[in-house]
Structures are given as structure tokens and as C-alpha cells.
Image (cartoon, rainbow, N blue to C red; front, side):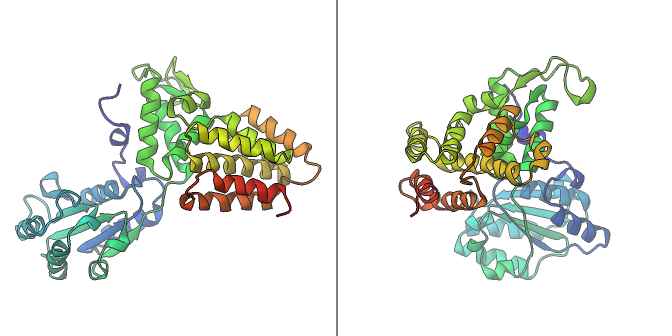
Length: 360
């Protein structure tokens, strides 16, 4: 077991280590170089994309010591008295830095009265104070607050960026995680580096880590334990490859009953239908690439195993009725979007099958 969470252990320590947020990093670095630092920033983005990590790095880059860096969780410090205490503290000069930096996480959780108190401070901030507000729900932040901040919107982690990060971390921890396993964990992370690393930690803990082995060529460790996609499926409870393949082969063979039966089998196993749908879409996308751009097969090898490539190529070869087309992929994308609003979670996938395989 790991004493230190992987997302803490591998939290970026400088701007160069920040992944997927170049559009923000470049602006912040430029503001530091030109000495045009604002008194208030608002970092917006989904969970686990690096908002607080970037805030800490920014504070360090402008020379703020730990003595002058304050982190506040607005979820548990949301009242007016908490903000009044912050305001009183902000008036005091820094201990040993040019600035005091206040990072307020989950700022949308502040009460109405607390917003009013914070607004007064943002309107007339002390010259030595910088506020960095972070939120996952900007629609809950008053416009009066937003208008007084420089707003930066963080992107969700792409599956590719998350996958590469996972492969690197697994290697450093003494494991050979295969590309398919990394891809699956990235999908499970749903755009969050932190969630992806949390899932990876679960997988590594279950796989008996060997992080003390000596490093050999390529950055891997001698005798590293291999972790395959099948291991990740078993440990995380993610849909098995066979359930995904059965759905796609049902489409290819125009077998509606088999397709609906496969979806219901997945539902009976209490699988997350949105995750199941996303895995189907990812593999169907690879199938479309193989059909219309076969020269890109080598580019797919890093994401999909040889067995799956062979499976998809066989489907393409036998697609005499041209059922495996981009229109089918569009229908699957529509069903994915509908899952959140369906009171029967498997229904959108069933309707996608009917729409694809019948004249309705």
C-alpha cells in the first residue's frame, strides 16, 4: 500500500510539469516576467485538472513563501465570519515575501453574506495581497466577483494526455502498464488527472507494488510487474472487452436481438452505462479509422491491442452492407449524450441499435 497518494506525490512542482493547460501557463508566465500580476484571479474548471496546483506554482514563482501562502476551503469555511477573519488578516503585511496569496478553493460554496464581505475586499485590495479563487461551478459565482477577477478556464484532461501521464507514473512506481490498461484508466478518470491517478493507485495496490527495484534502460524497473487491460477491468469493475466487442459485432451482423441482449447483460452486471457507451464509441471510432484510413493502423496500435485490431479488421472486411459507417458512430454519440437524462440507463443504447439496424 502507498502511504502518500499518487496525485500528491506526482503533483506538478513547476509550470513545465503542468499538463494540458498551456494556454493558462503561458499567460501567467508572461505576467510574471512583465511584472503585471493582477490582484485577483478566478480559476474555473472541473475537478482534478490542476487549478490549485497551478495556483501554488504561481505563488511560488512570484516569490511567496509558505509563511505568506494561505489555502482556504470554502466548503467548510463559507460564512461571513470566516471572510471577515480573512479580510482582517489580509491587511497585515507579509512575513517575508512581497505578496500574501490567498487561495480559496470551491469558492462557489460561500454564503450570500460572505460574498458581500469578499466583494468589499476585492474592490479595494491591499497592494500586497493576491487572491486566487477556484471553482468547478462558475455559474454560482456572482457577476460582481467575476468582473473583478482575471478568469482562466482550465481544460479537462484529454484521454491521450491522461494516458501518457499514467504510463509514466506506473513506470516510475515499478510497473509495466500496457497501453490498453492506461487508456481504460484514463477513460475512467473522465477528464480528471486526480481521479485517474486515484484509479491507478487502486490498481497498483492490488497488484503488489515493487517500487524499490533498480531502474534499467528506458526508465522502467528491473523485474517490473506487468499490468494488462484485463487486470484493470477486473480490479476496477469496468466493462469487459468481450461486452464491448459483442455490441459492435451485433451491429456488424445486423443482429438486433444480440445487441439488445448484450446491453442488458451489461446492465445486469450493474455497469456504468455511460462508461460502457464511451468504450463502445472509442472502439467504433478505431473501426471507422481502419475502414476509411487503413494507413493509420500503426497509429492505433498504441491504444488498441493486436487482438482487437484483428477483430475490427475482420469486421471491416466482412461489412458487405456498409453498416459500419460514420452515421452509425453519430447515432452512438447521440445516445451517449442522452444517457444522463434517461431514467432507464440502457435505453439510449437500445434505441441506437434500433435506429441503426432498422428503417425507423
